[in-house]
Length: 210
Length: 280
Image 1: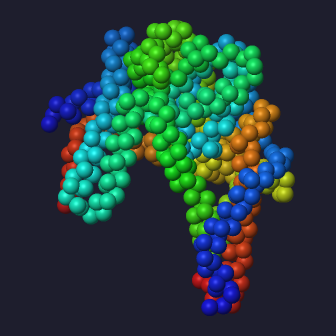
Image 2: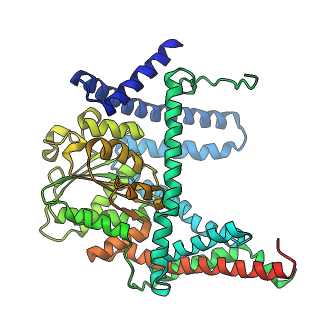
Image 3: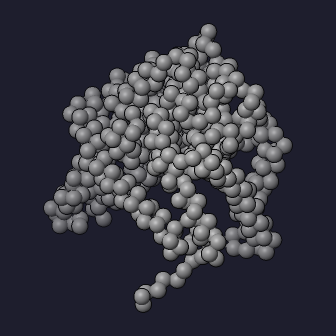
């Protein structure tokens, strides 16, 4: 168990010190090699994930598990698309499937948000108190700034909207980014010290009594 | 149930139908209205316009099926813009789907190029394809392209690509254009390319993500950002190449106004109902 944790700490430190200090060519070269490992491991993980998912759905069909018929859709779609893609990724049939099925589904799913957001806003975005009123006014100003006709109908929304986006909103997000970064640093220190082991597949029980 | 209650609990199918009409009508009968150019879009355009001829720039194509309608037209126009200025383009993507969509963007842009503009694959542009590994993959690519990619998206060995002969790391590029769509990957470019290598960068994301990245613009780490279909439309407008995005941006006029009207109506009804002791 010690070896993976030591490896994590050493490799992590190598990456960090290279970022902040000039290092000998041998260290830089080693880091380049290690980073290229990431792309190989990621690509392997993608293949592994696909295999595991396919085994899962194939078993589900075989055992007639709950809602197994959805798994048939996956298996058929996977076999046909992957088969054609492996044969020739620029094959017309493969591209036809991609352009006429995958793309419209993705685009349609994303565009549904316009409908649901409008419905949700009508029901929820109400000035029930001062906080909600501020949110409502900001939302209307930024929306009118973003739609092309907004600047023609209500010219003041442009500077006001830009101000909201750049300052209050920007400040909020800056705080969030700094907070997240500090959290990541803390997590990194815990990993280096061997106190965080989830990346090794070890989930420790919380010891509330401590 | 009173009319007020019915209006307050308006069937969402009616809202969906109204929104559909508001969005479909201007797409079917487009009317191009004058539009105000946002500062972030103008900064992005002017940055691209200021890159000297002959420079080599890096473009991350992160648009997928869901986000291509928003950013695709803008990316296509930017490719036309840069190639027309004799700037060499090196594309890469950190997603498998987005790598394919980047090919679509390149193909569409090449079809729009004015005659006489050089756009030979491997000489004026190259698509290095999918780079796995997320942010770590970007770091590896930025430090040593050949350690990550041995051939381009179409299978041409990197050694046979004239454009790549003197290019192997991020510092070899004059600029970075990060068309991240909704990948949330813009910080990858800032952390792995802008900060360590000092390469100036602009980005593109969906409209809702623009506030996420304004801190990077305010701090000077990113020069500007193309925000959603409106940003793409503004790029088309600045280039004098009206296209799909401009038509879609006009559709957002009606959709956006309907949204605002419904929200205002909802609030008016809410206050009336509250005065009458109904709504809570």
